[in-house]
Amino acid sequence: MSAAGIPLSALGLHAAAPVQTVIDEIRSELAVIILENRSEIRKKLMAAEADPARVLTGFMFRRLMDRARWSPRNDPFRYLYKMAADALREADGIHLSTKGSTGSLYSLEKESRPIGPLCEEDYTTIPLPADLPRISSLAEVTHKKTLVRLARWFWQEMSRLFQNRPIWIELRDLIQWIAVYIPLGRVETRLPDTHKDGTESDNLPAVEPDRNAPFDPEVVCRWAGCFSNLLNDKEAMAFYLYHGEERPLKDVAIRMGFKGPSGPAVHLGSVTEKLSAFAADLRWLSPDKETPPNRLAQRLFKETLTEILKKRFETP
Image (tube, rainbow, N blue to C red; front, top):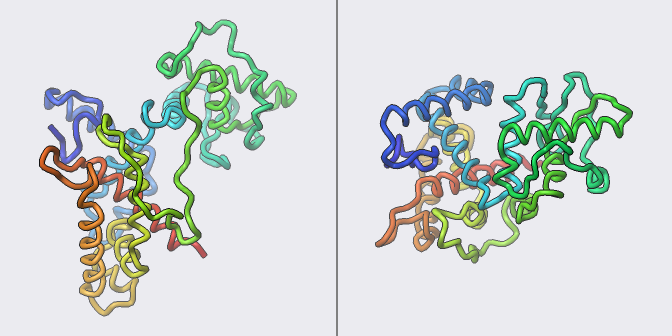
C-alpha cells in the first residue's frame, strides 16, 4: 500500500495502518519539512507555474531518501548522525548551527566560537559519563535522552580542554567519539569520487546489489553516477533544468538558447531512451516478471543524478 506514491513502510507504518494514522503521519512529516526548508520551499513556490503539491511531494521524497540512505543497516554512522541531529534540535539548552566545515555544529552556549574538526587524539581520551547505564549497541545509544546526555557530556569535556570557553563542536566529532565506545560496524562513508565535471571516475555499474534488502541505496547512487557519464552536456542540462530545478519547458528552452520548447524536449526524449536501455536489467529501477520497480529507488536515482549534474554545471 502507498500514499501518494510513497510506500507506507518508508513512513514507518504497516501496510494495514488505518487511514487516519497515515494522514497524521504525513501531516507530521510535512510540518517538519516546511520548518526545516522554509526558504527553499518559498523560492520554489514563487517560480512561474509552480505546483505546490509537486513541490511538497518532492521534499517529502527527499526526506524519505535520507531515511533510506541513513538506515542503521546501510550506514550506521550517518544514521546515528541523523538521529543525534534530530535529538539535539528538540533538546532544551542546546543550539545548532549549519556553518560547520563538515556539517552541523552544536553548543550549550549560543555565543560560542568554532574550534574546527577534531583529530582522533583530541577525543579518544574522553571517557563515557560515569552515571550513564552501560551501552553496547547502536540500538541502545539512539534513544534521545542518551544522545542528549552524551552530547552535553562531550561538550563539557571539550570545553574544559579549551579553558571552559563556550565552543561550537562539529556534530560529526560527537559521533566519532561515540564510535570509540559503541561499535558501529562500519566506518563513515562518502559518495563515490567524481571528476571535475561531476561525473564518476568509473562508468561501469558493476556493483552487486544486496538481494536481501528492499533496495540498496549505495548501489542505486552508483548507478546514477554511471548513467550521468552517458549524457552529453545538452542532455544533462535539459534534464537538470526540467527535473532538478523543475522549470517549465519554456524556461528551459530560453536558458539553453532554443527558440521554443521543442528544443529541450528532443534532448529530454534522448535521456529517456538512454535511461530505458541503461536500466532495463537493473533491479529496483525496472520491473521484471516477479517484482515491480521500487518507487523510492527510482526517486533516489533521480535525486542523485540531479545532484551530480548540478555539480557538473556549478563547476567553474
